[in-house]
Structure formats: structure tokens, C-alpha cells
Length: 121
Image 1 (tube, rainbow, N blue to C red):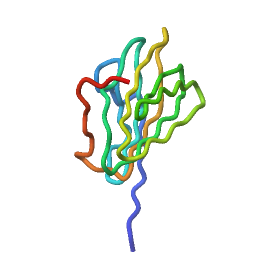
Image 2: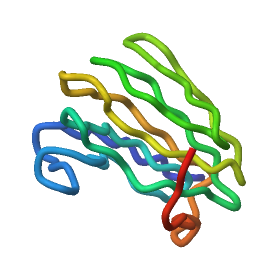
Image 3: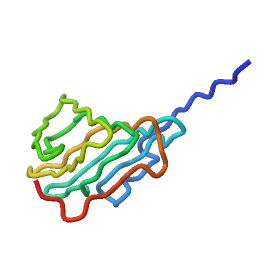
Image 4: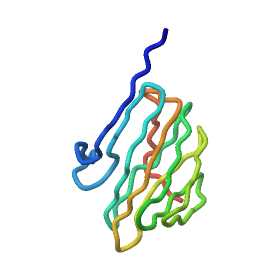
């Protein structure tokens, strides 16, 4: 008989990767990542793509530009975007308010993020 493991995680017990911004991982593997991502006004996250993992963002607060393969997608609270493996994506907060969004990555691969240097769109 397979033993199932239930995870209950309190967001307040986790920290954003870069202090007041970046991802806050509530779950990292074994099959997917689930995080809350926050950006302050003017902050961004380096352009990158994944070979295997698909990535999803759901905006819970604020607004953000998510550029996918050069196309600017201006997203606001309540909107969702799906990004396929191989699509270069870049997130930047051009607003005057902080942004919060949920991010999922699956199927989880530990070394599947390829950063793009000097990305322009």
C-alpha cells in the first residue's frame, strides 16, 4: 500500500529569495514547484527559459509585464498566463505598486533554467 504525504505549509514561515522580492517557495519538487513571487516597483527577474518545465503565473495583487518570446503581456489581478518549455520569458514591474503572483513549474527538473544575457524585447 502506497503511503500518501500531506503537506501543510504556512506562507509566513517562508522568505522571498531576495529579501522583499523574488520567489517564495512553498513547495520545491519532487514533481512541481509552487511559489509566491513578489516584485517591488521597477524590479524584474532575468529573462530565461526551460527545456522541460512549463511555467504558469496567476496574478493575485497588482500588475506586471510578462514578456514571452518578445511579446509584451500586461497582466493584472485575476489573470493567468501559461508559458511552454522553450519560450523565453521575462517579468518586470513597471507599475508604482508591488505585485504578487503565484508561480508553478512542472514537471520539476532541478537544473532546467537557462538564463538569457542582455535580453531585449
